[in-house]
Image (cartoon, rainbow, N blue to C red):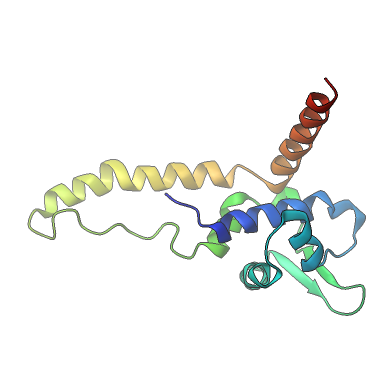
Length: 148
């Protein structure tokens, strides 16, 4: 499984918004782009997909931006990646080009379905709150290392 740059940026942007959730202030794409060091235009594409999946809402106007559509504890990594990575869990092609369907079925049942289910289960158990906690922990560790 390979997560594209778009998927990684989506997770990073959602983690950033989740870290600001308690303020209730909409976060602009420009501020997210500056924080993450990525293109504003690229982020607009990501947020279009996140909005379509009802994971964020857009606020219009001078004080506008994006907010999470629900609490960070109710949004998981699977939802974010599924909104952005449209082919994340698509079925794999037949390994034997239909010459030996019993092998293909064995591979599908013994490996690929189990793998997909395991990855989906893992991602569905990681919320944005978990990512924010990990981010804060890493931030604290960096600060400690800087002063040693």
